[in-house]
Length: 35
Image 1 (cartoon, rainbow, N blue to C red):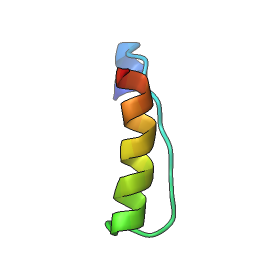
Image 2: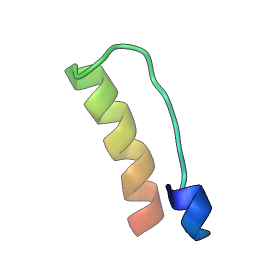
Image 3: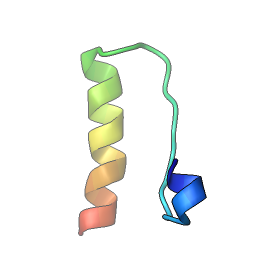
Image 4: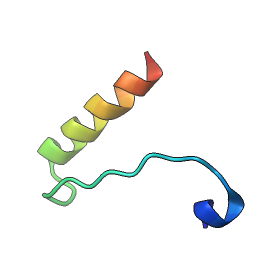
């Protein structure tokens, strides 16, 4: 849907489902974009 609307986004996959290592990895990448 975002592609259809022309909205830019970043997509990443990390194996492990909803486990702490996955959240930590995603938080690390997200925090870099904030600061």
